[in-house]
Image (cartoon, protein in one colour):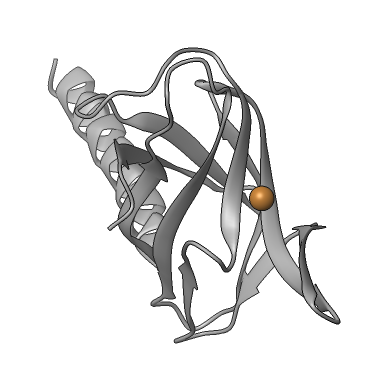
Length: 147
Ligand SMILES: [Cu+2]
């Protein structure tokens, strides 16, 4: 019986340490104020914005973003061609240690295409960020009108 208890304790501790290290890692990329642009009913495309801060000592690369609320999520930047601004898809986004990157209207953003439902305030969308080291992080982005 003593053996069984200590085995259980060991399992509990092992599980706890795995959880803790995952949380620690996810904490290295701090996501502040994630939100999506509220769109009129029937519009199936929107954009998500947030502030990213790499708190860790290693570079962090976001390789892919998915959402259960949209068919496709793309990372978009802008390129200035003379007098016209073009949205350009980006393969990935890398933040150096300590780097802060703002995804905001008119700049870097996540494009959400094929929304599976209408957007309303108080019903956040789920976004999953996938990193180049195989880790991922889920965030909730609140629909709201741009200020
Ligand atoms: Cu876009």
